[in-house]
Image 1 (cartoon, rainbow over the protein chains, first blue to last red):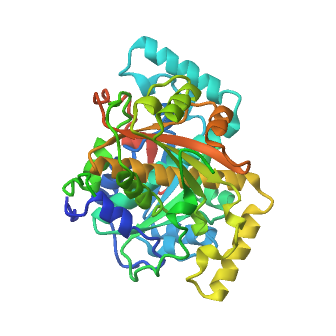
Image 2: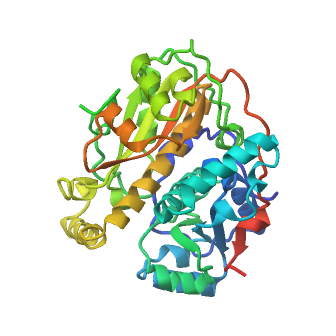
Length: 209
Length: 209
């Protein structure tokens, strides 16, 4: 590995210093080892029933990044960032090769999981959609925090034309694009956090009042 | 603060060692400083347009935790864990006191954001729902990683009777329960990861093949 890991940056620092960066250094490149390293951490994030329903498209090709910027309503980050990760959900992951997610479990446990998966997702597209949103949420935060530790920054992006972006990355029909994370070298720090709610506005003890 | 922070545990270690724990030590208690500490980190996780649409119910009351276990199909984790965090989404957060999320921005920028929020969410309940799923995903992973650094473990839980749990915590009508995270002291490590997909099965370079 030629990239530099800051082992002194603990999780708290990463959480506190992660901000959505708007201006990335166009000239900064990431190598395939760095990308692999991030993605190997991403797939350690949890998924319900271990269904691993995330799919990641890692874009470094400048031509494709430029097209993505266009599909993202001309926002500059995909074009300027070193790596665009498009987090997609495979809404059929739960039923592909049922049981592969639990091959290390007992047969009895595996059958319980398979039954639970069928009950939750067979006739419920909303449950499948909810699940890919959550899974990609876990993975995105994992990627953004891990990026901090190799000295890079990130920007989560939700504003894009879904179908236009789907064409660019050749999205399979049963997949949904959940969001993008752009990773790169920040040219400018982000501004101050905008209008944060107080803890007592969002945290409730034991029940909502 | 009386709890112990392991400053040597970096983000990578936290990501790698976070596992869904099934057996928690019933006798382990968390104090209010620890809980506040975790929640202050949770609310640093990103939300689209900074709408901060997560709401967290932090349950330590044993009676309520027992009820939650029942609503979670008799799974033991909520009852045995030290803290149950119920991650809820306020689907109307985007329109409550519009502009408060951007008070540090210019007026022009603030108005742009308000217009974008209206366009995306006014007539689109699915977009609101997707947004709370993602936001709670980011926050949940933040909490689970931060817990590792104060020597605790966690379990993300999605299997519960939504309406039963909603009653227990007095969920407001326009909120959705997205998931729970139980935090506590592990009594047993989790088993080996079950049937993980290979990187090349879930990561695609530049586009899906």
